[in-house]
Length: 121
Image 1: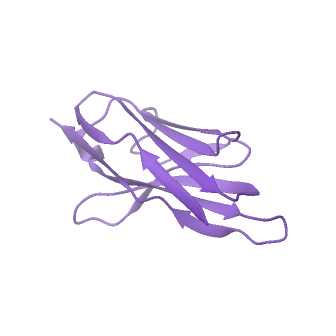
Image 2 (image 1 turned 30 degrees about the vertical axis):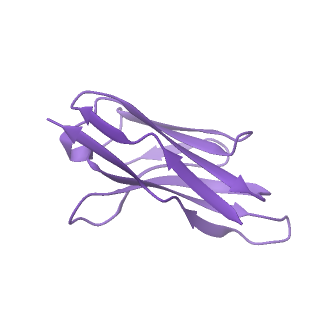
């Protein structure tokens, strides 16, 4: 079995910082693209950032210049550094990835359990 475990959420004042982590565990042959999503109350889940296996990143316009995602392939862990946080960043944050457990298998989708980020004004 493969699991994604997120950590690092919490309550922070506007302008503050948080760093989220998403660690994959289990039998893993390779990890493809990793994405960070968020869902605020009453809103649809939206894509925040992605990072490919080669390290290329993309960000939603709303977080460009403030959020940075990175990955440590040796630890099967991805990070989301969030700076200059705003109240509108308040949401549950999820990591998503595609994992191949064996060389001969296809990639399967996996989601983290979500971590709450609350930014007070």
